[in-house]
Length: 119
Image 1 (cartoon, rainbow, N blue to C red):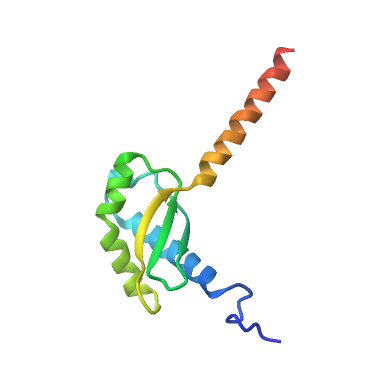
Image 2 (image 1 turned 90 degrees about the vertical axis):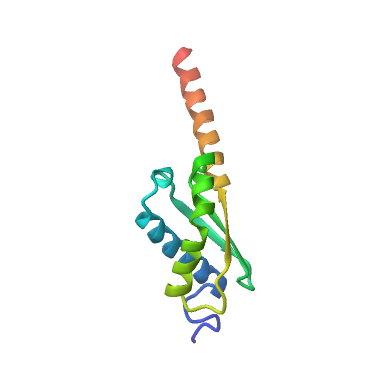
């Protein structure tokens, strides 16, 4: 029996989020701005009405945040050209909290290993 959510097995907003992530990541690769050299898009969370989308990036030092805000219109334009959706969301950028949490876990594990070697 076909899935009523579009036949893809997951909700429309999740599909849109993944599509936005792909478009933004590809556009960022094409931007010649050294402040964005080590920035990766880790996820996107669009509002159900598609008015706003939060873009999570791997790290966001101050310079990268400034560059992302500067290139926001270009990124939104790429979405508007490449994605067939009702409206183009206004983008906001934040560092992915999962990256920081993962780093804390790794630091704890390293500390535990170091303690084992000292005994």
